[in-house]
Length: 320
Ligand code: F6P
Image (cartoon, rainbow, N blue to C red; front, side, top):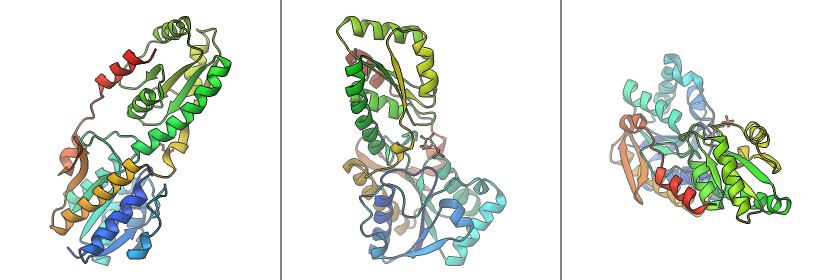
């Protein structure tokens, strides 16, 4: 394969720039021409294609966001949109495509592969960590670290005022950001979409922690359950302790990627291009048991994510 394309799609995630760099540099290493497609599938449909050179990706490894920009593109769900996308690839002679994004982005890649025979490689780039086939997605580690920084600060002020903090984190329908940031911040309670919650039990846990000498409580609520404001109001009706809601919001999507995310980006990007260089398409790359893996894109997008109940129990046992 001599000409490859690259796009970032869906919600951005820290580490996308590092992955762009890895794809471009690996492609150039193999003597390929690499084309960046701006604004995700929208840019593919509208022919926003730029040639990527060695220096196009200098000095970006440390930045959040995506140099290629991104979009959520409904047109890619239509036959017309997909026809236009493929026409752009043909116009530039692009033989294979690397797609960095989440579930929705992979569905676009799958359609290009299945319906048009375009070899695609998916790199999991989303803070949500909601893809079943990989232990971690690019951006998750940085997002959780951002949450930790904020929760640490909340703990300071909540303890001074003896309050209860309800912190809303992202994740769409997946509770992983709440689970990991809850455990790592020492939150007493996490509320995730995968597990039914009982407000009375939460109140009992707050009461018992206070009886045991605690001066504040942190409750991390995944956005897929409820917003912090609504949750905070319901809780306030049942407890004498003062409750304060905080929604972390899009701060989670930005910022300099952590070492873990930069390492994933380097390895995912390099692996994606190695596959295309061998003429292999229709795959996704990921990490499982600390090893970089690849698998069939159709199989990957149809897998169902399993919640880590053991980690959830761990939090129950050590946070009180
Ligand atoms: O998928 C990433 C994500 O940040 C989710 O956690 C969140 O629900 C959503 O995107 C927010 O989307 P938008 O940036 O369109 O507001």
